[in-house]
Image 1 (cartoon, rainbow, N blue to C red):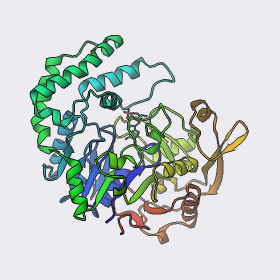
Image 2: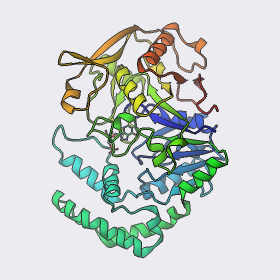
Image 3: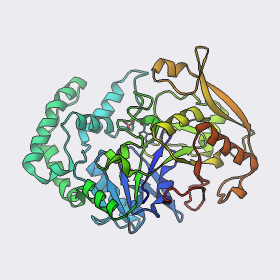
Image 4: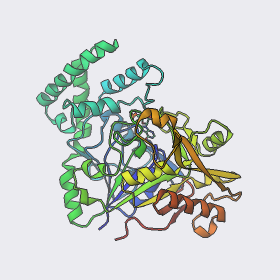
Length: 431
Ligand code: IMP
């Protein structure tokens, strides 16, 4: 029985939400395995728009189990608000439909404060451009063995001891940044207040998923962000603080490496990035403006304008390798409608040498000059196409060239935010 991982193969915002929603119909369980409420997934279903940050995209589909895995960092106050607003849109969320791993670390208000204070204090060129939601500091506490985890909410004495341990680290750090020490009692009171709203969802997710897998249920692993923001394989240090690549799916819920049968990489037909960091194909001209305007490229979480550029096949070839992508879903092809000529980056020139991948050293990344291939565009609209026959010949040529350059086939083609505007080539869930 196939289990599928969906990962972003660029810098995030590739349109994963729609694809996860589309695939979730074929799945029994939808699990988030990394990231936090820095993610912004927009789903449009029958004209109704749902905006999700921490909740798995599967929650809007009835009869599915949604899971927040241990690889996630969870802001319990944000989650409670998100559940309330999604419920207002008529979606049923209960401990029968949502489970949170007991070993999930919490994001506390002090994490957001620290995240924002560091960004403000950072000098030019060192800012990461984070979402300010405390993701980095929360992961730091996890690996520093001072997190407060979901299970700690169930016992007052443990909770207080955990808070004390965390503050031993945070208070001196805050002093250094000119922030007041943490009000210990107020933080503990806040945690005790939220605990009864979180604990009903807490579960040994690893066990539940192991049983579900044995009984033949299908699991869809929902990635957030994109592989180029991966803490190890992204454009470090301008990355997020979790492993984003597909290997994390198993660790992030407590399953073995053999639990993943198919990796679907979500790839936008051009490139965007929010936040700071290298971006070889970035465009500062009218073409870049046009991509941003036509593609509505504004961050769902921060509202920031996304940086836009041509499709970078060298980078996607790289992320398809690091995530073991079996097939891609190409999204937002319609944004390229009407361009006379399209450019695709096929590699880089560095110090007179040709490279077919982005090197790791930051100074080399900054000096890489993209090598482009040009292709003729198309004047017809591809928006809403539901079969290959509805696509202009040049659009098909563009898609075929992308497949060749990234060395990975197209499994799905998404032609608008509506879920039915999708061309299926290979069903990732097929046995
Ligand atoms: P953080 O995850 O808030 O620490 O931000 C680190 C970097 O990841 C910044 O460049 C953010 O803009 C970027 N980032 C975080 N989440 C997303 C996302 O869901 N989509 C796109 N970029 C993201």
